[in-house]
Length: 255
Image (tube, rainbow, N blue to C red; front, side):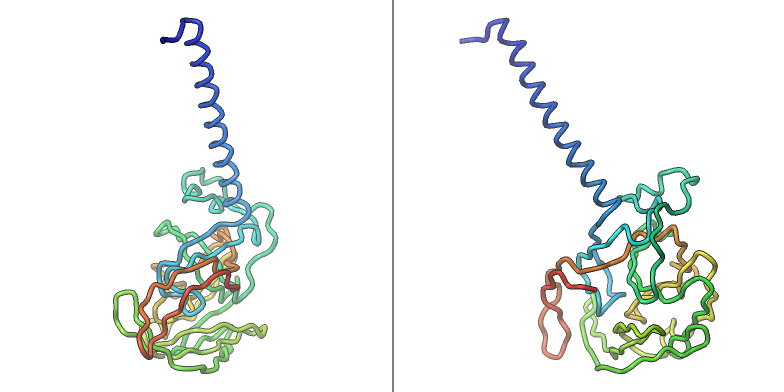
């Protein structure tokens, strides 16, 4: 039995209506998603060892977008590079990062997101001498914890000393030092310009950070994307071997 001429238009209208509802639903979901990752929270993948031991390769990190306000680089998917250059500055600025906080920034040179720790504020002088960090001429205290050995992403064995590095305000974080004579263990002094920040990785001899002028260099406040607040999850990406560090699954780990 075939549809009558009167039934065919009715069927077409029904199909068109259902298709329109589906499109509106998808558009609504996309709008909610874009609003969430632009103004509230977004997840970022950790691809390198530069922030070990706080962050491990494979971690998915939840980043708060509203701590420091918004700039064009708050837009997801690198859309900030496609808006007019006149979109400069930050709006709804709620403060700037504290020393020791982990932040996600946009690297204009590579056009990728990078996560590092804030070490220097505008006007600070930062220097590294024989592996030791100096801030405004004062030696930053570090306390040895233990020797660690782990396998790097390329399969090589790495030996490092873990230290508690203590910031002037009393906050601390753990760093890795493979030696005190690596290429970036003597750098500076750096005078941090106005509206810029000096960032470093916790795995000091495996991090291309603000010590590399031709790399990340000083980070402008507008390039701040947000503050890293927790490890959402990670799946173990290394093989258990005697005597080697191999972090297991990590879920909702505060930073």
